[in-house]
Image (cartoon, rainbow, N blue to C red; front, top):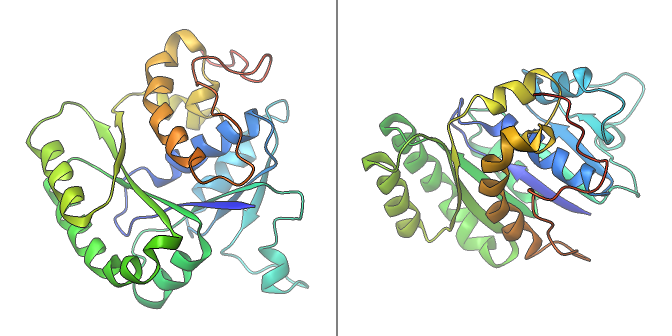
Length: 238
């Protein structure tokens, strides 16, 4: 089992969108996939609730609300058959909670928006993560996604500089597009939208998938998002 966490203390940077897209990709390619939601807003779980049963199955795990009659460890148990767990995290994660979440992950993706406010928040977040990076860097696969980028201007180049200073890879750049909103509203991932509409976005996701497949146990060759498995990505949304 490999646990992929989408993590950033800054809210509004697209953590849930990235988490749900990842879950769709792996489920569509035959992986037993679970989506674990640590965010009290429960955006990932609400997205799963509107997802059609005809779509590839993704197991929901509510990591916030305690279920009566079961232990915490059982509530968070994804099952022996689960191969991939995608973990969606809340904003404002600091201190002991950050340490706890950090140690639950095998791979960590950090989305950041190309704005001055987000970059300032990212600097503070990286400072808090610094000790954890130094202690467990050889054991963690950590990368950054520049999210909702309209143009590669001053703020984007500031992200590149910050990542160089932190010694973290800038894995991919995702464009600002309505396709992600359309997918979320339909309980889909962008990879499940009609190829004619989402081809550019699928190409933007290929570096993320290639980066993840570097460390996945029993890894399979990463399939291009532009060539989905037969019958697994229905044309549900125009």
